[in-house]
Length: 308
Length: 284
Image (cartoon, each protein chain N blue to C red):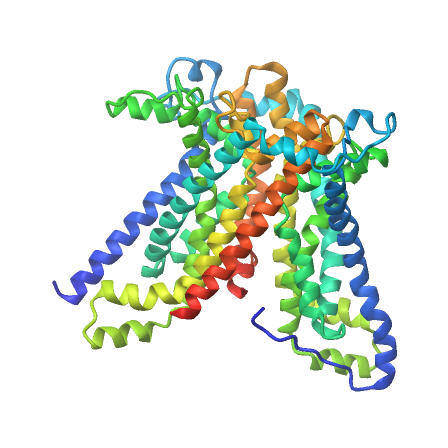
């Protein structure tokens, strides 16, 4: 965290006695709620991952510890690795696209003065729309194979209609398109904020020194917006790894298992199927991957930027 | 090429990019809007784009929604309203009090660690929680109740509120609060009468963001509710899985009713919402 805590102790002793009470009254409800609803599920799920807990057998049978059996099952479960692969493919598809669109649109937005606020406000819109509405109503209507407008436009342009939801590849593309539609705005707004933090004098000085615009962009803009870009990318990568809602309602993971994500697999195993133990081990697998990945990402980007 | 011509070219390219992306964002929403005025026939032969030219718009979907079957979607709609408002209000009161405390009091020099502890929640995938919540709320007999969603959503919003509001309160001058306390006000009075009103822009932003979060949430609602307490997103997906046939015009009208209030609120408060959304990364 960049800022040091600013603490303002009361000057008078009698306030401090009273404050000692208030300081706990203000903080403890939040701490208690988070401990109960964050720590308990995290610990409970870890416990469940090492047992044979099943939703429909709770109370009827003794729950037994099974050691690493669930994780062994996970490692050899081809269907789970399929969902892991799908999730990575999804992430690798959407995040670069969002970065490119985000940077292009943010640069354009930073380049204009009239109407900037209007565009910024409009770009906020997709972030407010429920993923269910986006993928279920919008996605299913737009990607309809026979009379959907996307295929209709493609046919009018002389192409063939695309089997959006029945072909494994195209179903994944459709899901990516929906995520890009919804979340590019996040990259746009973050990168715009980063670009606006670049002092204009620097470009002016570079121009006077004879640098062209491309040099000025690579040597001044890019290094200065790098920290925010890296953080924004990390947030998007983590969110992409957790993708589930748009998949549930657009393709249901299909055709076959072609678009099933890890989180959807956890929901199916644990909630629908009631196999809490195996679902928990999958959830922990996802958490561990996210933590290793997030940690490595932070260390590597910090080191890379520190060296510059 | 002169400097002016270059500038003009750059701004033309910029506006082209911006208008193009605006159109991409607009088109799906436009499609939902016109579909809510379409008849079955307009959606059975070919794609129709323009009202009055391609197809005759009608109000039947809206009449169906607001006159014929009002109670049918009013229940989930009210569930969404109650769950979103109650959970956001609870989260706002509890979260901003904690944010204030972390800005003004010293917790043995560990204030930053406490805030980071709150934020660690962001790393955890939702999938990690749904299984535990399912068992937890089943044991408590709270499955399919609005209370279960209110509890989950308020706890989900608190960390973010603590984080943003702590920073916001730190930016407020402490002198006003001190002089009020010398005049005999206690901390509670200071928080609610002085600090909170001064922090109103921040409070509005986090409140609206948690409102939108609760309003749009699907995975937890799908896990914990199934009949009485279902919210709008769940209600919409249930319409199709039950019938297997989709009345797109009705679904589109429901979508608009559910989307317009939050989008309007978010866009009206653009400055604060963008600030709240980008806050985390900008500070990092």
